[in-house]
Length: 90
Length: 151
Image: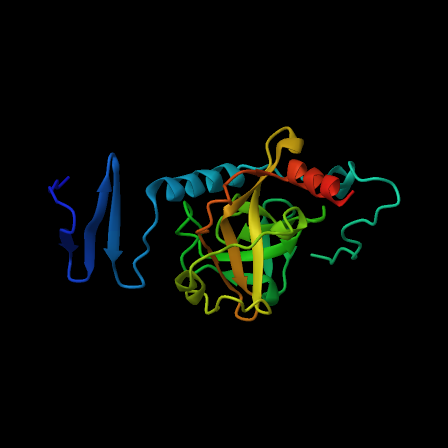
């Protein structure tokens, strides 16, 4: 991994189009500014990883789904069910 | 056309149920073609990969248990599927559901909503910029919160 030292207001250029600058430094927190073409996706790494991980867990869900009455069992009698439309045929 | 599905085996689907994910789903980037099925159990849907039978996701419309939900995704992400913020007529919003053995503990991912352009049948898993939304919202708890607040 390439490691560079930068001070506040300094930046680095990646390729021709991406610029990352150090906007502010406070204690152990660094604020970065990122200039990149719109088709380059920029995410916080932990958010990206969390969603990936959750997708993987979701893909392992079995084929037995809870029925609607599981969703409604805490509702009081006389309350309208949330959905009453008929099931379309697959 | 016929598609092999994880929940229902080989079934006939309508062309209009097909959905293209230009960027795939995070962690499943190579799979781009899906079909959206109504699950036999409402209010769920199945998002079934057309390429791998074993890959299918359970979806739910988040507003059912979080009426205040707004995905807050960037205009750029919506542009990828030819939508604009506020274009509610063409936008369908789903959350991926994770159902563990104890089904009461099922959770929905509100941080990575699946947003669908219903006219063009293209979709994308976006990332919400709103810190309120996490990857694991407990659906049953959220539902009982709604009921308690109504009464």
